[in-house]
Length: 466
Image (cartoon, one colour):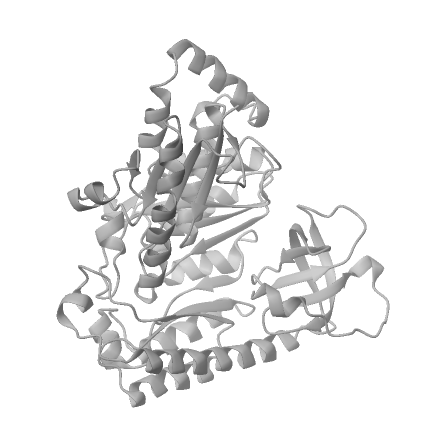
């Protein structure tokens, strides 16, 4: 039996793409393996949003040259933003040991490459047998052949990603995504509902709808249906317990969307809406389309609609021209707004973007690292203070898996919770009494087993990172 291995780096969209590729390979009878040396097919799913991510991908690709050349029947596929919408002649010439180049969210080139080695009749019978292992949908209106995104081997995940918007047309000056993933393209609503129903039929309890700017779902065809309509449609699926969506943009978060989050019970009170910087001049140079005050008003509006919401954000430090005073405005707005989570990044010029072409990368690396470290310390303190409010409270946790001997799951606000329980709680909604909190996670006891106890501060929080 042939085996495959997928190496993935980057965003949640890449994770979803890799899961889809794995499912397609397993339809061909190829089994997963954690070992590259055991694999007959290796897929590298790459990211180039930061130089560090691109360097890792290029290094991994170089290390696989000997692996590919050792056996003629092996297949090496390169996927994702390093390839882009169409591989450049320069990329093709640089890596002649790569068999297949695949753009983001596109499994077909690899599947067709492998299918060419099989006889059609054998392939059809094989795919049907493989699908029958996992797909148990009884409704004839959802044909099994159209379902995707879950592997046929192993347990189905409790939570799964569902891409709803591919590409991006907003074109922030620092962002390479529009150049590598193409223009914004929304998937048809019935197709997304069909896929989600298939995932739920396989055991998934929670889905996260993905888009580079997920709020712009439907904009490319005039805004009807939009993200609100999509949320309402998937909300009706029996067996689905939780719905999330990301990533949002401040300019497209409407009152109708916030009302949907507030009123639809399955949609979680968790919003990811990047600010990127706290200074108006820096925001203008980024071409974000809003001011710091606009973002303040948005956060107030979100909290008015959804009082128990958790708001996550993204920050870039060291953007071209960012002065120390401008950086301090970022520190100040984060201190003021006290957002639950901040994803931090040091600015990295990406080839072809406006900022790389027109704006000198003038912040020394040590300055970027210093600013990054200051925000990390601030974020850790604020997160610890926010989580401390949940001490001795009971929260509902959707249990995903076991980690270092404890059950691991997340609250509606996406806070990470660990607890002990001898029972199999995977995939269940469990009420947990919180007995310890840290900046990145919390620990507790199932409410039905809770009793007063002295809690020794654990070390798990040091290794999970949230």
